[in-house]
Image (tube, rainbow, N blue to C red):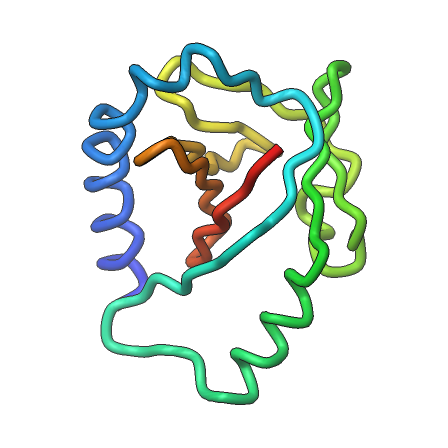
Length: 125
């Protein structure tokens, strides 16, 4: 079932990005991005109340910092060990590559989103 979710997200990502990429020309990734909302994406399951509370606490005041020297960091490194201090590159399809792992970054309705695993973070500068 996990493979199906990954395939589905991988299949849908180009469509999501292509619908919104035109508006991203004025937005640069470099800088500090605050998480203002989050959504868990999964087929057939969801977070229970305890997991939602944990996630709300985890993303409270969370900042992703995409530095000009192409290093990503957060103000909560213990929660995002896979990203902390790692070099990133931006692909032409608005994906961010960190340690050979692609993470989508897209814009819809003037809102920016960063997809990390099964969580979509709504972020703002």
